[in-house]
Image (cartoon, rainbow, N blue to C red; front, side, top):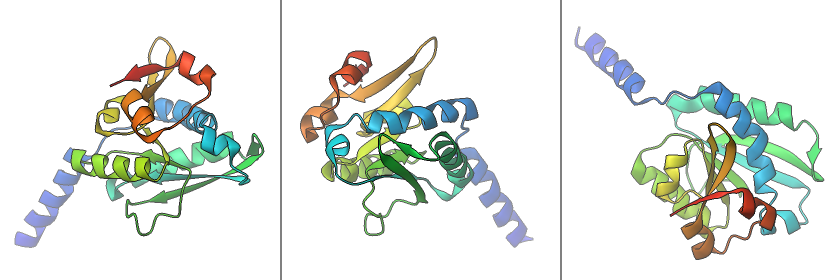
Length: 177
């Protein structure tokens, strides 16, 4: 009986802490995140023929990460600006991360968000958040989807870690911090 209670508690706590992801928003972000990433100077000028994207997710968000990955791959089955997009899904472990150019961060606890963002920024990796409120934890960019679709950029992170974006993107974007 005790095992059933523990399993029930584990199942319910997982449901309580899981984030709901809107598939329409994920579809829009899957189209825009790679394009925005290619507007960052280091990625744009890189001689690599690959744009490596890692979706950083916890186990409870694995289905959302799979959906995100599938949408990116469907949107960009070939090259975009002469770069082939490779998408991976991973839990966050700096020692096992395979030097991505871009990370998309799904739901994490605030302390984890800060750790992921700090690691990405120090390694000059463009980071995107599903939710623009996660820019408060140091994530570089997100997208506002409302009456209009507008990129959000974290001004503090851009300055502190010297990310350089195309002036066109800067004109279109709304800045936080």
